[in-house]
Amino acid sequence: DVKVTQSSRYLVKRTGEKVFLECVQDMDHENMFWYRQDPGLGLRLIYFSYDVKMKEKGDIPEGYSVSREKKERFSLILESASTNQTSMYLCASGVTDTQYFGPGTRLTVL
Amino acid sequence: AQRVTQPEKLLSVFKGAPVELKCNYSYSGSPELFWYVQYSRQRLQLLLRHISRESIKGFTADLNKGETSFHLKKPFAQEEDSAMYYCALSGFGNEKLTFGTGTRLTIIP
Image (tube, chains in turn red, purple):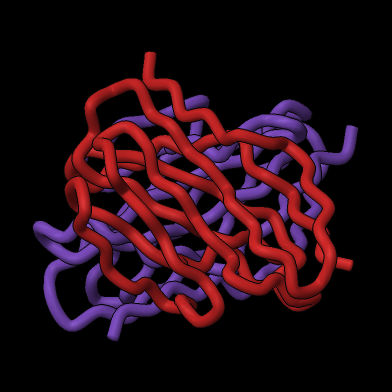
């Protein structure tokens, strides 16, 4: 059974702080993804990675960066958090076009 | 550019009644279509994909290339079907998914 875990379920940060969201998968998947989920907007892709040290921008990469130093771990970084980054963040991993999602991190930026 | 449209944000259906969640897409090539579901307090998970042509939990979806649609249907709604449903699309050989904005389905007892 595929397991995707995210480091925190809930996170509260202040404007301007640097924020790290961690995601780990245990199925040796090549592909990993970060989305944000907002009511009325659905899931929007922030960044994805096809391999270690590889990354590609998704649809809304502004204000975010990512890191993939190991195959199982994909980190999302908010360099300077802003209130409009308050959202639910979902990580996913996958093979071919099937994605397996983590439980999500609800981030609130005050 | 690829795009997925789910015109209904909210849908309420009585238990035992038929359910249809609409999904339309825009894609210039040959798409692969999916339905993902998120039950309350659970993680998002794949419900079904058009290529497998199977019925999951009584749900089916047919890809209509002429109408560029992939509507999700179930003949008799059950209370446990209440959830958030997302339609998603990927291009052939492309692992990236484009999601619609989602439809929250509520089954009225």
